[in-house]
Length: 474
Image 1: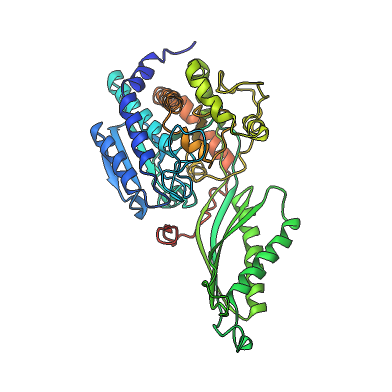
Image 2: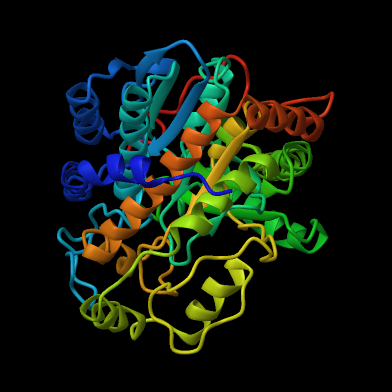
C-alpha cells in the first residue's frame, strides 16, 4: 500500500521560491575548491532562517557547514555541495559559448542546484516532523571542494558522520534515477622535483633539470598505461614548469597526478607504482623528489535497502513535467551536442535511448542495469561509514555533458529548478520513510555491515593530513 506523500511534497513546494533564489545566488558567485565563502554564507543564512542550529568550520574546513534541527529519534543527514569549476564561466540561457568572465569559474557540474535541493529536502523534512509530532534529528552537511578537494573524506575521517543513521543526497543530471553503480577510488598527489639551475648554453653540464624529471615521469607513466587494470585511470597536469626562461636549466618543477582504480586498496597499489616511476625519473636526472598526497576518495558503496525506498518514492512521484516551451529551449542546447553525448547519457543510465527525446519524460526504472559512473565522488567516503543513498536528477537537456559550458548555461533555467525541486521531493519523502520505519534502518545497517565487511573502511588519506586548502587554491 502506497503512503500518502502529498504532505511531505507540499512542504518541499512551499519553499520553492526561497531555494530557487539560493541556487541562483550560488550560480552567480561561482567559487572553486575550498574558496566557497560566499556560497557557504548563503547556505548558513538560509539554514538560520529555517531555525537550524549552525556550525561552520567543521573538520577544520572554513567553508564547511553543519545545520541541525530536532531531538531524539534517528539522525537523517542530507549532503549538499556548492563548489564550482575553473574555466567554465558561461552566461545563462545562451546557446553558444560566451563566458561571463574569460577563464572564470562556472557551475558546470550543477552544484548550485545540488546543495540547494538537499537543504530544501532537509527543511521540508524538519517541517514534516513538526507537523507529524515525531522525534528525530535532521541534518544538513554543506560540503565544499567535491571537485578534487575531497572535503567529505576529511569529514568522515574526523567522525562527523559517526552518529548518523542514514545519509541522503543527489546529483543534477538528465535522466532521473537511483544511483546504483559504484565509482572509482582516487588519490590526488603532487610530485615536486628539485634540481640545480644553470645557464642552459654556457654551463648546461652543471645544471640538473627538474623539468626533465617531470617529463621523464610523464613518459614513464604513459608507457605504464598498457600494464594497468582495465578500469584504472591516471591523469596529470603541470602545476609548475619551472619558469618562462628556456635558457635556464629549470631548478624546480611540479606535476599533479590523479590515480584512480576500482577500490581504495587497488588504487593505493597503483599509486605505489606511480611513485616508483617518479623516483626513477629523479634518479635519472639527479634531482630530489618530494611527494605530497593532497586528497583521496573511496569507491561508492550502494545500499540496496535504501535504494529500494528511494526508488519507491521516485516511482510514486514520476518524472518532472516540462512544458513545450521548456522542451524547445532544451532542444537548442541538445543541438550543440554530439550524437555520442546523447548516447552516453542513456548508456550511463543503463537504459535504451528514446529517439528524439529532449527532456526526461519518465524515470529510470528499478530494473535498469546498474552502471558504474566511471568518475569519483567523496560521497563514497560517507557511504563507507553510514548507509547512503543518492539520486540522479532531471535538470538538463538529455546528453548535456558534465563539466561543460552547456551545463553552466542551463543552471538557472526553469528546467534546472523544476528538476531541483523534484529531487528535493524524492529525498524528503525517502527521509520520512526512515523516520517512520525502524525496520528499514535496521535492514539498511545490516546490509551495510555485510557489504563493508570485517576490514571496513580503508581511509584514502593519512590520519594526520590536513585539508589541502592552500594547495588547491587557484
